[in-house]
Image (cartoon, rainbow, N blue to C red; front, top):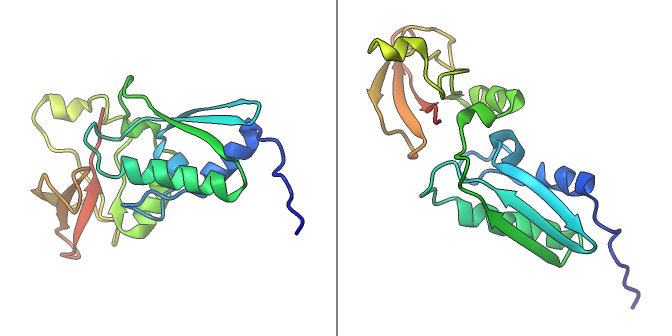
Length: 171
């Protein structure tokens, strides 16, 4: 039996592999789309991946850490450390544009740019206009602050009448 060793890890290769790790709650998104990977460090054969949870109590973080480890193990990388970094806190402003587009195509309204750090309308008690991901209408209303997961709110479109999740802004 012939065994081969994996090529020496490089930061660039590890970032490529992380693009293949999906968010367990929204599988069309990679963890890079979410912006939760803060750093990759390679020291010889040892790889450290630093991730920041979307919420401090996010139940998906242990699954994400396991998926990262399994993906790197599948490439033959055995020395892997997953480091959780909680400061600075994750913000939806770290989501990639590709991730926002994937969310909308999946039927989830993406967070509105710039609202994570405080949208001017919110200062005056006005609701943020959330566009329906199905018919693209801006005539929508909030049904519940809680959607299918803690990071989403439930909206309904006033034109097509379809309910949909909105990925809440988080600063």
